[in-house]
Length: 239
Image 1 (cartoon, one colour):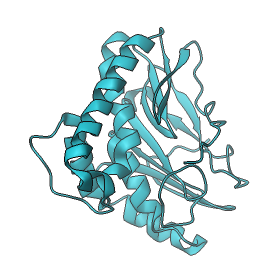
Image 2 (cartoon, rainbow, N blue to C red; image 1 turned 120 degrees about the vertical axis):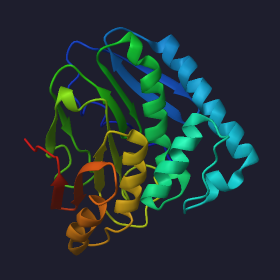
Image 3 (cartoon, rainbow, N blue to C red; image 1 turned 90 degrees about the vertical axis):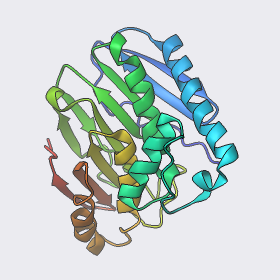
Image 4 (tube, helix red, strand yellow; image 1 turned 120 degrees about the horizontal axis):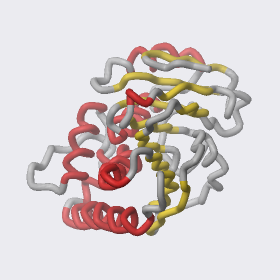
């Protein structure tokens, strides 16, 4: 797997927060919080990765399927969340894995910090007491870093997840440089970004993909960038 240099890791203003990396295998989290919580974060990440790895070993279709698979009431919480959110979006469970890891680690840390940003490969979980400005990274597109939107504190905790056919290791059947989805659930935002991105092959697909995506229950906003073209729908306050 090609490692994408994470030059986009400055895309959310993190004034006065402490930033640090927590990494296990391919899970590479950049966390910003009021104080350094790396020890707690590492334990949380290890716990949720263990849940996923153990489940995948006994349920290989959870890892391989590109379509939803049956929900499992006996599965660990992170697995159950991925199963239910992927079913809503019509994609395989692993489409939501990066968002799910961000979110589950995030909720484990929230009782120790009032401000928290966890970024995992472009999939972000945010809790903030201040207004934040977020930029969209879209690879080689001229619009990369030039599309910015506001995150209001009262809307957090929030998931902001980006899928791309041209950046990073994500599997996409489309051609979009960035499909950025906003939802209260980072797991859902991640899975929805994959589902929406699969529908964007030309600039003429942007509007139908936005219309499709905003109907996914739980999605509150979407930005799509393809080359020099973009579209947005829902609760997206561009600046």
